[in-house]
Amino acid sequence: MKQEPSFFDRVYRVAREIPYGRVTSYGAIARFLGQAGSARMVGWAMNASGKHEDVPAHRVVNRKGLLTGKHHFEGTNLMQQLLESEGVVVIEHQIQDFETIFWDPSEGLPQEFQ
DNA sequence: ATTCTGACGTGGG
DNA sequence: CCCCACGCCAGAA
Image (cartoon, rainbow, N blue to C red):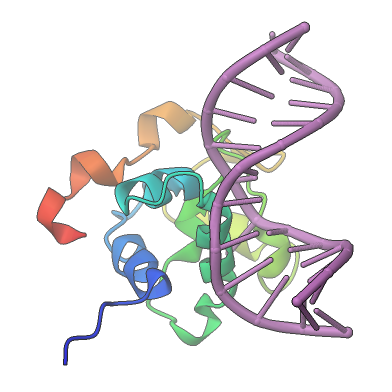
């Protein structure tokens, strides 16, 4: 019997491929998985990613490059610290040069990956 | 079962 | 550019 990987698992698989020092958005992941419009579910998946430590949830932000999820990390600055340790500049919850370091799964991964 | 809440995105004004 | 309304759908109460 074949088991279709759950939406959450597919989100995690894509998230693990985000290159060091790069970021992507919830919507970009959702679109790559053929679930455009379900960006909120990607956020929900990240919320439950506590069990999956190999998921770099800090590299996923909203479409404006704003660290909207930093509240869900330990402390008040962990998400920003993780990003800055990778060379990403964050000022007032906003990623600088967002368009430059943005990584689109549909361009960085083979279509078969999903 | 129903209602509400989100780590969101898009379209219209 | 900003603001608002709506769609999205998995969980919690």
